[in-house]
Image 1 (cartoon, rainbow, N blue to C red):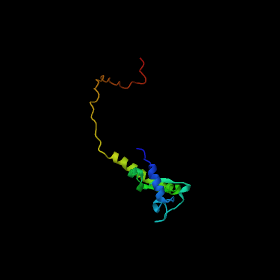
Image 2: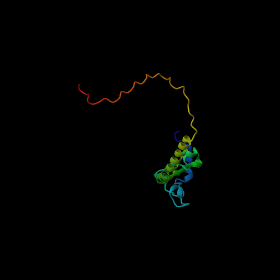
Image 3: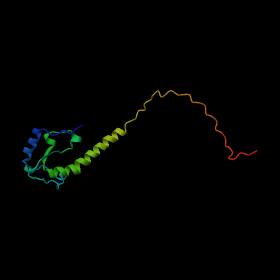
Image 4: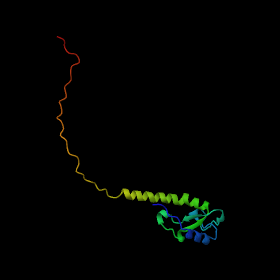
Length: 130
């Protein structure tokens, strides 16, 4: 399933809420605890799913952050990618641990085999001459 992006309305509201300053806060974005980035978003803005879309499927304004490319890149590399990989592994392991059902088939009809011929014994290398 493809990732859903934020609607235009949600992105506009997030940018307005941010005051056109990066909304990245704390260690979730690689900053000291409680510190906000506040980079000017007129130089570039990206809209981040605060809780990874793969896990939340939440495209609401509450899950949208208007952040600078630097903070978004840090979070993607250090938070989102490892979290997404773990989610995929857990889903895969869940599929592997399901009970397997053995399917019984009728099989193939047995063919009669030709009788085996006896194997000849060893022959002498040299025959006695008369």
